[in-house]
Amino acid sequence: MAFRYMVLKNGWLIFNYGTGIANFRASTGRPGISDPSIENMGPIPPGWYIIYPSEIEEGSVNFLEKKDDVVDYMTTYSHYVLRNIRGDWGYYRVKLHPQKLMYPNRDGHRSEFYLHGGKTIGSSGCIDVGREDIALFNLIKSTSTYDGTDNILVEVTEYPNGNGWNKLSATSPVEELEQWWNSF
Image 1: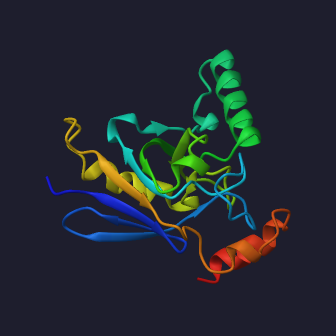
Image 2 (image 1 turned 30 degrees about the vertical axis):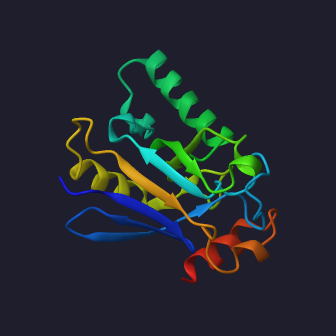
């Protein structure tokens, strides 16, 4: 298996999987926040992280398919609603394990970052690929051997978000963010 790695730079997550390269629009943190030391708002600290494909979690819930058992249906539906109130996880997510941070003394206190998708733009510091999570995670799965040797290195650069991200307001209307996101 070829060495696989990703680079988050200027609003793009570039995935090199040995036989090809795929690009996915991505962001990290809240719009207008550029300091990685700000808890639950700043971007993921620059550095190197590892993804273990065996840890990929599927978060998709199609509560319309759970009609057989009413209790099962209500439990599934409530998990779906709560997940979207507490955060926008998308269909898939995987934990990013820090290996080496560029500024460990300043950013080292933050942890529990994920690579995930979602309906809305921005995150609490995770890498968010928006609605492209299905395509990205299908590519990760299809290039994995799941034998413990197929871990993926993720490099987060000093400029992980696209141009103009830092000029947006953290309280911008969703429409403004969607227009900015789709302008690329």
